[in-house]
Length: 164
Image 1 (cartoon, rainbow, N blue to C red):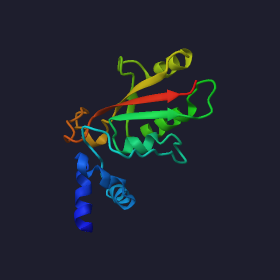
Image 2 (image 1 turned 60 degrees about the horizontal axis):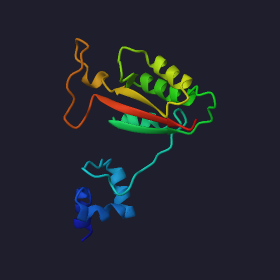
Image 3 (image 1 turned 135 degrees about the vertical axis):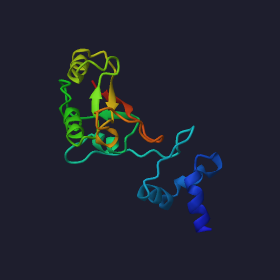
Image 4 (image 1 turned 30 degrees about the vertical axis):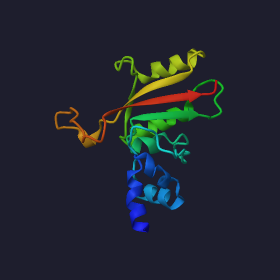
């Protein structure tokens, strides 16, 4: 019975089996096996993480997972909208060759312009930044990006919300 429950928990995208993911030992097993839920509807449990020593935003942790969409609620004490904590997370991600960042409206624009625009425009409710995951893993000798495996994406979206 335990083995059947365990196996069925990985098929929680079916409504009948979603209750299995509410069991604490099943959630722990899914975390240990790095199981990622994919389905048409959101899972019944959402994990919210906090950052670490180098990056207190948890941005780097999510970039390691190559998340396609990241919602970052920035709660750092930053009355001037300098986004120092956020910029540090982006710097760490760049140094680790996890991702680079770009302006999704025009990828030719430097990311610094986008951050300055957010700082200057207090009416802007959020910041939308593009994520480029194309580093060593999919780089060809000519420097171009190869197509990644079907389950991975080369690009993502990062939405930063900040209490202003």
